Every structure is written in C-alpha cells, then in structure tokens.
Image (cartoon, rainbow, N blue to C red; front, side):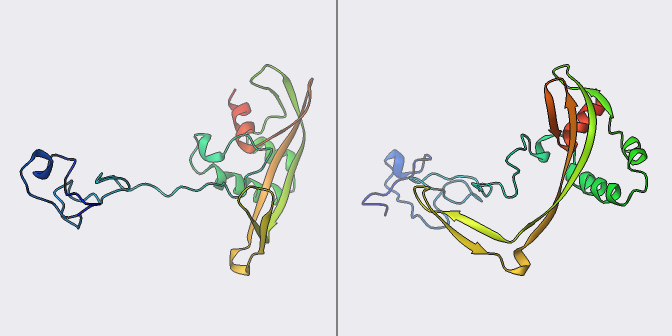
Length: 176
C-alpha cells in the first residue's frame, strides 16, 4: 500500500479497475530490470553519478581537455612536459612537437612564441563550503589523497598583448 492507495501508473490492473493491487517490492508489474526511481511509482533507468565540482580546474582555463575532441590529450600533454624538461635542445623539441613559433589566432591576430611555462602543483588540503557560502571547512589531506600534477602554458605575444595558451589551444594553432 502506498499512502493509502494501491495502483500502478503503467497500465496495471488496479489502474484500470481490475481490483488487483501490486505491491511495491521487486515485482510490481512495471518494467523488468529497471528499479523504481524517485517519485510516485515511476521506474527510472540508473543515472550516472553527478559531481558538483571539478577538481583541479584552473580558474584561467577556458576549456576542459576532455571537451577538446582529442582522446588522451592529458597523457600526451604529460609526455610533452616530461620530454621538454629533459630536452637538451628545447627549440628542436618544440619543432618536433609541431609547436608553432609564429601562428595566427582564430581571430586573425599574429602570435609569436615567447616562453613555455611548466609548473608543479601539489594539493595538500581541501575545502568544503558551508551552506550560504560565507564560510568553509578546511581539511588537510592524508598522504594517499595528496595529488601532484604539472601545468603547461605557452606564452605568445600578439598585437593585443600576451596570451597564455594551453597545450590543446597550441595544437589547434598548429593545425590552422
């Protein structure tokens, strides 16, 4: 019984006056293999887990690598950082990686490469905002949850000033 009434919204006998009440257990006459979802007797397919935040999102980063269209771009970028740091001849390494020294941006601005920046980042703490957003809780991370990663930026100069481009953006320049 469901809040004083028995019925099935999916065409069961009780919904059509047949007088047969279906329980709300594992076999309620609804779609087989689909667990009842939230709401009133509605079956729903399982949903993917939702996450309300994006860990390690660079506030100056306009696009996530996963949305750039190239599979495993993060792995290619990691290999680039490792190889560039160990390269005896960084200029030749950039040529081999097809990083343009001079290029045109999508808006037509001529760009010249000034610098390649790599940055080591280690996250050792986490914050959780309290309701209302005026305060937060801080927790140091245990050793097994500490994360390390490297950031890579290509600094180009154009007529409108200096631009810091991501690896994905530089690969798009090279393809143009």
